Amino acid sequence: MPPPLRLAVGGATGRMGQTLARLAAADPSLQMVGGIAPAGSAAADAGADDGYPVVRVPEAAADLLRQADVLLDFSAPELLPRLAALHPEALAGRALVVGTTGLGAEALALLDELARRAPVLHAANFSVGVNLLAALVEQATRALGEAFDVEIVEAHHRRKADAPSGTALQLGAAVARARGVPLDSARRDGRSGQSGERPRGEIGFHAVRGGDVVGEHRVLFLGERERLELAHLAGDRAVFAEGALRAARWLHGRPAGRYTMRQVLGLG
Image (tube, rainbow, N blue to C red; front, side, top):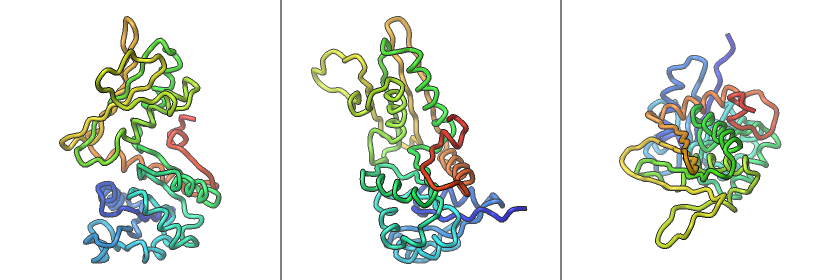
């Protein structure tokens, strides 16, 4: 039997970090070597947390990075750049699965830099269903053409900080890619007041926030005489963690470079 895949998790005290620890603990093919959390979190200050043998602040995380086969980062946008600045040698060559949303241009450039020496996979959403949805959206866009208007509606819990969600933008990018246009040139976030007639080719985004909604995404293709709706509704945060662990298994041992969930799922 091969040795277990050794994992470290950035954002260990967050919801995804806790879910990853719980799933890894139930899988003998995985070994959680530890988590990373910012100073000031109770777990990091105490040095341990449920599901993790140890939790380190970023400044003290070099040993965890060296032990791990894969680092899964589901933290805040500033954590990975901080780890790269503090522990470049420990991070070098480490397979990296990144699910942190809201990354800016500097963080995205860092992923490209890290991918020169290690396999890197960054995704807005690790749900198998969502990534299949994105592939179906791209296929539907090509088949329906610009005669159909596209609107994307997403809903999340009240604590979500960014809007539209990274997944909604992923779905919008699938539409734009199928149409051969940059998403930024076609994107429109919500409408208010005298918005005027809807331009052909526009991709609309609408964000709903409230309660404990895990995540819902609907892509509406609106034609003159018919409407097609493709949707994904997540009932449990575990679906995202399951997809991330699947990606970690697939990514380990790959050559350096950037990878996608489409490749993990064999979607091209």
